[in-house]
Length: 304
Figure 1 (cartoon, rainbow, N blue to C red):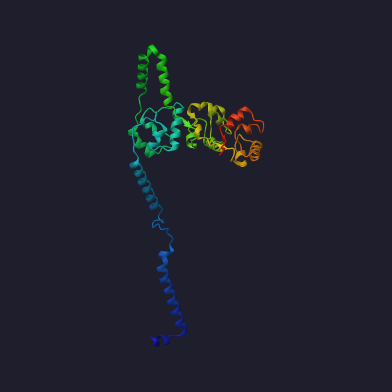
Figure 2: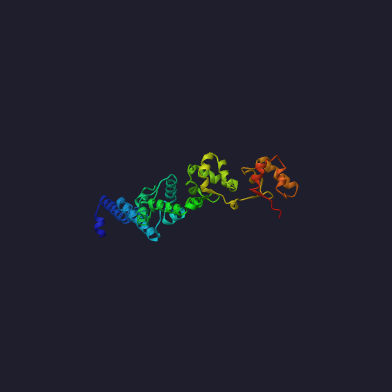
């Protein structure tokens, strides 16, 4: 073999070496190809149609699982409460649209009408169709008329009972615990005003009256008046401030406390070893009776 190699000219030897290097390089490159292709751990990433089919299959399986886990039951879309709709799988947006439709005088006459609810998942809507039980308007009318005839000797009592039943069907929102989705159900209040209400409630510490909503920036008084029957307040949820420990920054950040009053409170408690009664701070600067009443809802004295 070595004799054959030595029998070759230097030029032929160099050519052989170069050819061997090229062949070795091609062999190594061929072995490294599987490692050089970036697949992102996805064997079908290069095939868009196949990947689309896989994604759709996963989505269908997910919806099937959700459907199997959801417990469906009969309901009347003209009367169903928010809690009932949530149990059935309605999204917050679908609930808002359904309630607004009912508040504007809309009514569902047949099961297929629920397919027209905006933001209601089409698959869920089809699943719900067999469970939609709409009470006939004619039956309601006959029933009401029958009740009226039976109670004719004392029609005022019957009228009162009917009013109570109507009130029971009205949704009520507690404004100290409501979120933006709850508030968006109300007429004339969109996402912007809902966020402003939550922001104002946060700096305020909570609402003690529905009328305070009129203080929200950009809130028309007419909107609050129109929605008054849907609003309620839990005053126990108000977060009060202790005037003996609240910082100057925290005091002056409250909408009802000016910088001057906050500064006077801090200086007074430092000179007098604390505040023993809220009436003490009302004498620091001129405080109108209306403001005193408001501050009593948000301030308290901790003498410990």
